[in-house]
Amino acid sequence: MSIVETAAKLGVNAMDYIADRITQKYLMPHLATLVRQAYA
Image 1: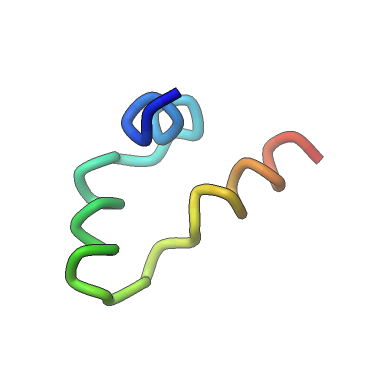
Image 2: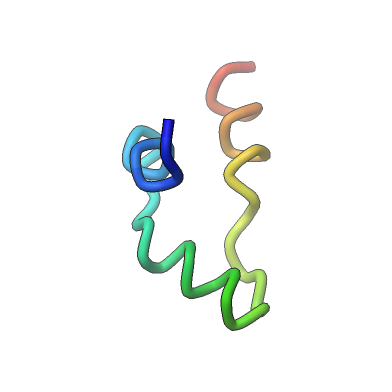
């Protein structure tokens, strides 16, 4: 599964997420954290 597909399943805008990581602002939680929360 791609980052875009994972983000879509979690309701996260993929471009916003990627931009957050590239700019190193880290205002959004890691996708792994969101996956753990969604499936816990």
